[in-house]
Image (tube, rainbow, N blue to C red):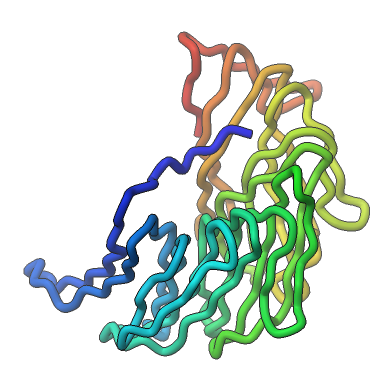
Length: 269
């Protein structure tokens, strides 16, 4: 499947900066190691707690020279910091193959939700392992407490692959996730979809308390479509941005809404 994330560097310093109204720097935090690290998301809740996610290989130094070593290929670090940049905790998840976190969102009740992809097995906590496939990409949605404890995790996969790219909370306490998939994808009991051609887009709502799927929408054609991000407004309307090729009907049914590209690919909102 196509990936939008090409931010791989020999050395990347994950910096979080907080500014005053006059743009004065208040603090900077660094995560680094001898190989490749990249920060992929940050979220702040109403209590001014800061959560960020990083993917890394090898050994990285976080705070007070404490080191974290990946179990194989890329692993994931989840950090919680105060508004002053004081580290509260760090949690590592990952397996022997590539694991990538793409997005994070913190809720007002100080829970945090992370989405990403993995292959084979994903080690989440002592004795807690999420099983996937060795030859295809599966996706996860993970909910942690404010102290870093695992509250629940959900796996979404297909016979070819599922990439969850974005997650948000909504005003009615639900989660909205979006991403890309190929083949026949399973999003929980009574929620499965089949791609119409190459890669299609999915938008799904989850119960934030349980992680169960409550809504699923597909955007697709005989060609390939991709999304990397969405957002939700105060009225719980969902806005999705992405790209498509050739022709795409955004409203299959009697009142179709077909758009045609002017070149190789066009952007939609």
